[in-house]
Length: 95
Image 1 (cartoon, rainbow, N blue to C red):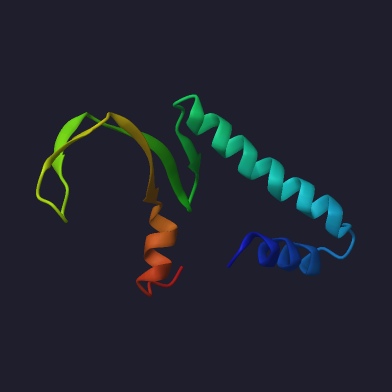
Image 2 (tube, helix red, strand yellow):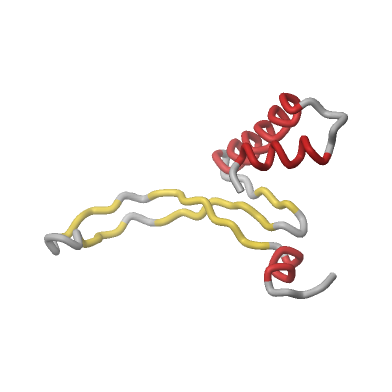
């Protein structure tokens, strides 16, 4: 599902809301998650999962084409851990 499909689905299920308002709400939610993660905060959505940022230390890697050593800088990467409800639903467990 892409963002526009999510917006359309929410607007369809809530006919009292204008599509432009639903779009603004969805965009605000995503922006807040992004900003929290940029600050290094963890974002937890109960039952769904938690977004966090993991730090990867600098290391020496290898160029797969040439085999030469390459310095890889330290970086921060997004990480998502599924919540119990989502994990159970994906594995066929009933509520």
